[in-house]
Structures are given as C-alpha cells and as structure tokens.
Image (cartoon, rainbow, N blue to C red):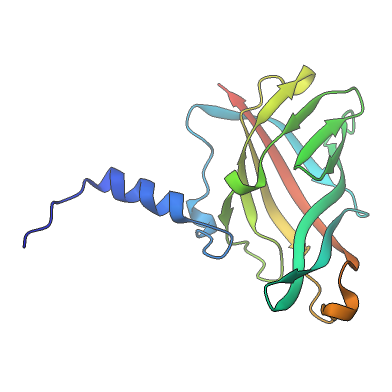
Length: 174
C-alpha cells in the first residue's frame, strides 16, 4: 500500500503542535516572531520565585506548577511589572497582558539547571502593553522543582518557592 506524501509545512506544524514541556525544542530554534520587534525588555529582580505545589498525580505525588511570583524591571527602571499566576504581567500603572500556559512553546535553556525558555502568545493586552503579541522568557537561571524536598501524601499541598531569574521580551508588530 502506498502512503500519500505529506508536505513539509504540514509535518512541521504537527511537530510544533506535539511539542510540550516534556519535549522542548532546542533553544537555537527560538527566533523573534515573524514581523515582530521587541517593544519591552524586562529583567527579574533577585527576589523572584517559581512556586511549586505538591499534588497527587494518579498513585504518586509530584511538584505541580510552576506559578511565578516575580518583579520585573526594564533597563531604565521606569516600568515595574508583577509577573504572577495565569501567567499574567501587570505593571504598576495598570498595564496588563496575559497568556495561557498550555499554549506556551518550550525551549531548552542554555543552563540545564534552569526552567525552560518560553514563547507565549499575548492575550488581553492593555494600556502600555496594548500592542504586545508575544512574550519570550529567555536566559533563565534556577526555578526548577525542588529536588531535595519530599513530595508525598504527608506533604500534599506543601508549597516551595524556588528562586529564579530570567529576561522577558515583549514583542509588538514592526
């Protein structure tokens, strides 16, 4: 039986659709989104964390999350942003942008002991972030689930705050 030949563009789309946190893409594949430019560049402050919660997963337990709790600043320190669960980025002036974690494209970090680099589509951007279409998290350090803390029935519901740092790029159309 002969199988139909599928166009490469279709196969590439299937590969991206199937890409998950468990099968991240190489970070060399992370590029500026087509037709986009960096509108804002933020860096996390040293007190930024990823929050993990010990939860049941079938017959075992594992660290779920992460949920960020980070303060970001731009290079001239004129704009301060709180990054929290959602994921959501909210500036002190009320500018806000959200995304949906399941829509994130994951990329391997250059530092293997760090959380993945991400590309997230923007959702509901407002005020200064009104033109933001994509958000990249790059240059990550730390933020992985706790390796030395127990996560079992006795610790179900426990939370651990793990330090991390990252650069966030907010993209808008050129």
